[in-house]
Image (tube, rainbow, N blue to C red; front, side):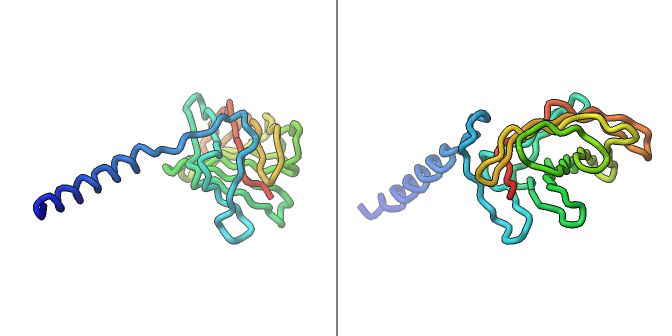
Amino acid sequence: MRHHKPFITFLGILIFISLISSCKKEKPDPEDPNTEQTDTTGNNATAADSIYMLFTAQVNGVGFEADTNMISYEFDDALQLHVITAADGVGHIVTLMMQSIEPGTYEVDFDNNIVIYQNGLTIYNGGFNPEGQIVITHHEDNTISGTFHASLFNFDTAQELEVTSGHFIHLPAM
């Protein structure tokens, strides 16, 4: 019986590891607006740490999906704008700046509703003629959901960029 104890311990550890690895969290149905968020930052910015959040877009036809640990919300007192920043962890960042987070359709402009895309040090914004929309479809329980699209421009390289099919679901917004 004494020789079986290490084998049983090993078998128990193996079963435990297989159970842990098989318990994967699934992303929720994007249409379900009843997902709770958690503020883990302890300051005026709220970081995303929930698997229920989603921030995606197509940037010149290439998919962008933010890492849920790299989505944040804050209200910028100086600009008087709500700012959502979403990064994918490899140097791509999409920022939405909005005067209001109440449900509605907001045209992208120079001052109140802004979409910015950053790839490393290269920044694209509305350029001389901002075009696009930010649509807030849901704002309840300190979370918002919606869509966005915009034509962006980089002044240094004179390149244009299209951000299409943007979606954000259950993002923190206080």
